[in-house]
Amino acid sequence: MPAVQEDHSSHLTPDQITDYYRRAYRMVYNRDPQVAHAFAEWYQANGEIVHRITLFAEITRLRDQAQKERLKQADRSVIQRLIARLKRS
Image (cartoon, rainbow, N blue to C red; front, side, top):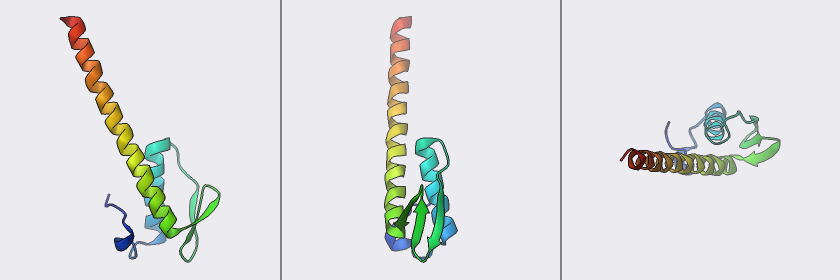
C-alpha cells in the first residue's frame, strides 16, 4: 500500500481515501470505522466531519501507531525467546 502524502494525494479518489483510512484504523483498533465521503473535500469519520487533509493526517498517525505496536510486539517476542533459552540452560 503506497504511503499517503498530501503532495501526492490530489489524484486519489474518495473511495481510495476512505479505503486507506479503513485499513489504517483496522490495523490499530481491529474493527472497522464508520467513514464516508460527505462532499467535495469533506469526509465523515466516526461521526465527525473532517477535511481531507485532516483525514490524511489521521491515516499517518494510525499507521505510525500500528508500526510502533508491531515493533513493541517484536521486541517482546525476542525477550520471551531469550528468557526461554535461559530457562533451558
